[in-house]
Image: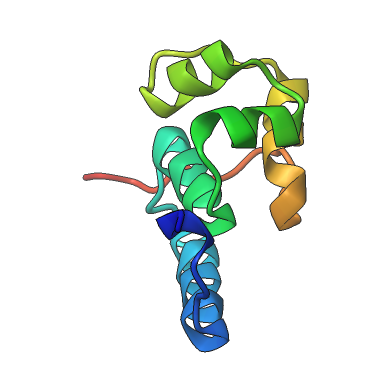
Length: 95
Protein backbone atom coordinates (compact mmCIF):
# COMPACT_ATOMS: atom_id res chain seq x y z
CA UNK A 1 0.00 0.00 0.00
CA UNK A 2 1.20 3.49 -0.83
CA UNK A 3 2.36 5.07 2.45
CA UNK A 4 1.18 8.53 1.35
CA UNK A 5 -2.37 7.27 1.14
CA UNK A 6 -2.60 5.62 4.54
CA UNK A 7 -5.16 6.95 6.95
CA UNK A 8 -4.00 9.95 8.94
CA UNK A 9 -5.60 10.80 12.24
CA UNK A 10 -7.81 13.88 11.73
CA UNK A 11 -6.40 15.46 14.88
CA UNK A 12 -2.83 14.99 13.64
CA UNK A 13 -3.74 16.47 10.26
CA UNK A 14 -5.41 19.45 11.95
CA UNK A 15 -2.29 20.00 14.06
CA UNK A 16 -0.09 19.97 10.94
CA UNK A 17 -2.30 22.60 9.32
CA UNK A 18 -2.43 24.72 12.47
CA UNK A 19 1.36 24.61 12.80
CA UNK A 20 1.72 25.52 9.12
CA UNK A 21 -0.48 28.61 9.52
CA UNK A 22 1.22 29.58 12.79
CA UNK A 23 4.62 29.36 11.09
CA UNK A 24 3.36 31.52 8.21
CA UNK A 25 1.94 34.14 10.57
CA UNK A 26 5.23 34.22 12.48
CA UNK A 27 7.24 34.57 9.26
CA UNK A 28 9.14 31.38 10.01
CA UNK A 29 8.71 29.64 6.66
CA UNK A 30 10.71 30.36 3.56
CA UNK A 31 8.91 30.01 0.24
CA UNK A 32 10.55 26.64 -0.53
CA UNK A 33 9.67 25.32 2.93
CA UNK A 34 6.08 26.57 2.67
CA UNK A 35 5.59 24.87 -0.69
CA UNK A 36 7.09 21.60 0.55
CA UNK A 37 4.89 21.73 3.63
CA UNK A 38 1.74 22.38 1.59
CA UNK A 39 2.59 19.44 -0.64
CA UNK A 40 3.30 17.15 2.30
CA UNK A 41 0.08 18.14 4.09
CA UNK A 42 -1.73 17.36 0.84
CA UNK A 43 0.07 13.97 0.79
CA UNK A 44 0.95 14.34 -2.88
CA UNK A 45 4.13 13.64 -4.79
CA UNK A 46 5.77 16.46 -6.70
CA UNK A 47 4.23 15.37 -10.02
CA UNK A 48 0.78 14.99 -8.44
CA UNK A 49 0.96 18.35 -6.67
CA UNK A 50 2.21 20.16 -9.78
CA UNK A 51 -0.59 18.67 -11.88
CA UNK A 52 -3.18 19.43 -9.16
CA UNK A 53 -2.07 23.06 -8.92
CA UNK A 54 -1.74 23.55 -12.69
CA UNK A 55 2.00 24.28 -12.80
CA UNK A 56 4.86 22.46 -14.45
CA UNK A 57 6.81 19.85 -12.53
CA UNK A 58 10.04 21.67 -13.38
CA UNK A 59 8.73 24.89 -11.86
CA UNK A 60 7.68 23.09 -8.68
CA UNK A 61 11.06 21.39 -8.34
CA UNK A 62 12.88 24.69 -8.79
CA UNK A 63 10.68 26.42 -6.23
CA UNK A 64 11.13 23.67 -3.67
CA UNK A 65 14.89 23.85 -4.23
CA UNK A 66 14.85 27.61 -3.67
CA UNK A 67 16.05 28.30 -7.21
CA UNK A 68 12.89 29.41 -8.96
CA UNK A 69 11.69 32.89 -9.77
CA UNK A 70 7.92 32.39 -9.85
CA UNK A 71 5.32 34.62 -11.38
CA UNK A 72 2.63 35.94 -9.07
CA UNK A 73 0.11 33.75 -10.89
CA UNK A 74 2.15 30.66 -10.02
CA UNK A 75 2.27 31.64 -6.35
CA UNK A 76 -1.49 32.22 -6.40
CA UNK A 77 -2.06 28.74 -7.83
CA UNK A 78 0.09 27.18 -5.14
CA UNK A 79 -1.42 29.05 -2.21
CA UNK A 80 -5.09 29.13 -3.05
CA UNK A 81 -5.72 25.55 -1.94
CA UNK A 82 -4.74 26.64 1.58
CA UNK A 83 -6.63 29.91 1.44
CA UNK A 84 -3.45 31.93 0.92
CA UNK A 85 -2.91 34.82 -1.44
CA UNK A 86 0.14 36.74 -2.53
CA UNK A 87 0.68 40.03 -0.75
CA UNK A 88 3.17 42.28 0.94
CA UNK A 89 4.34 41.30 4.39
CA UNK A 90 6.44 43.21 6.86
CA UNK A 91 9.93 41.80 7.18
CA UNK A 92 11.07 40.87 10.63
CA UNK A 93 14.14 42.73 11.78
CA UNK A 94 17.23 40.64 12.40
CA UNK A 95 19.21 43.22 14.38
